[in-house]
Amino acid sequence: MTHESTSPRTAAAATEAAPPRRSRLTGNLGTGSIAFMVIAAAAPLTVIGGNAPLAIGQGNGAGAPVGFLLASLVLLLFAVGFVAMTPFVKEAGAFFSYVTIGLGSRLGMGTAYVALVAYTAIQAGIYGYMGWAIMDLVRTLGGPEIHWSVFAILTLVVVGLLGYRHIELSSKVLGVALVLELLVMMIVNVAVIVNGGPEGRSLASFDPQVFLTPGLGVAVLFALTGFIGFESTAIYRDEAREPSRTIPRATYLAVGIIGVFYTISVWVLVVAAGPASVVEVAQQTLFGSKNMLLDTAGDFAGGLTRSVMQILLITSLFACVLSFHNIVARYQFALARIGSMPAALGRVHDRHQSPAASSLVQSVTALVIIGIFVVIGLDPLVQVFGFMAGVATIGMVMMMLLTTLAVVVFFLRNPRLRKNPWTGTVIPVVAVLALAVSAWLVLSNFTMITSGSVAVSIGLALIPPAALVAGAIVNRKDGGRTVDIQLEKL
Image (tube, rainbow, N blue to C red; front, top):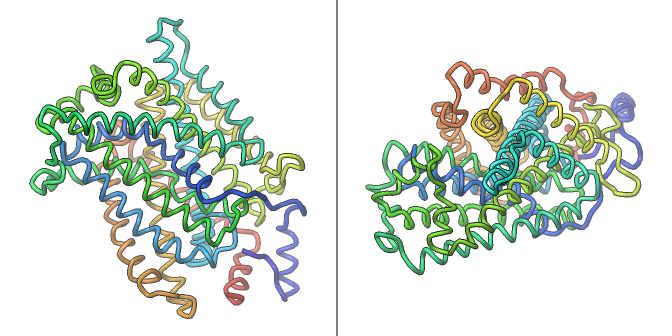
């Protein structure tokens, strides 16, 4: 999005908000690199190990794979409108840029604040999960008892160093981590499919009598939380090789790969345990007496694969938290460029060509949040991760719903820009309805995500809406006038 104007008043406002000359990120990221970073943010191995047992044990049992499939379809519907509008969004601000153009600057800035809160929350939650996972591994190997926060802070330091440098370095690290975790899960998937489980290669998961139960909504809920961050393809716009082509391709590729991977892998867990026994196995995992994913790996692919997978679960979390760090740093950077955050956050590092100042601020923010969790004495897995994942899930659904509404309104106001009524109107309207149902599922089952009391869950659920209101009040310094100018040029 540009900030030029033929009006002296608008020009003055734009000049006031303009950051220093070196304010635009550069890069040569291709479709694969961006898709890899987005998929890494989804932490597929962690989702299969954590969300899948929840969807099975508390949801619709053997029918849980259909819940992941339905969540994938909802996000695919969202992606259609998102991609259709992408050529007309020139600002690397992801959701808030789309909402600003479609629904106005106030809701746009509100969406930006929701994004900052949601992604900062999930990042902090993953630091807690990461600290617990490494602590548990050290304890399992006979090492000393070390507080989880030590490992969380060490992870934060490494993430901060990578985030401070050019995005190409992060993309390579994330690419390697992602390939390894996908590879080990594929080995397990093939082993289970080749050998079959107690009931053979059962397809009971896809039987309507099995998946069409009241617990289907719960399965969809936990599936949706596994997609947090998938839309961040647009946040890398300035660093993409050909944004108009790269961003749409990366979005579809990310949704497709994640959706197929989740659905097949959850089905494999059902096959491995047997449809008749899978709920019991999943619930034993939830109570800590078993580990559904690791046990399946050990039983079907050998002890070495199990050990490798346990280590890769940690690298999966690392890739995830690095991805979210980069996303938040770029959100802050984009907001600084339009004058809604301190100008220093909108500067590009001379040597690394990265949003270094924004990255550093994000590292400090995460450190402060971890410190607060430690002082309060929260459990790193159940409370830190559970609470923060809840905040992020509500924030994600809110942002997608607002973005899809923005797509519908944008093309209704600008019919000459709509190349296809299906991609510009019909499918986005269907996506709005699907996301509204998703929002209801999240809110009606919110205590399952947070594992907290009703009072705590209500307090956490109100954080994203409060961020939306705060952002709408703050708005942007140019009052959204440049948005009108941009639309006139389209």
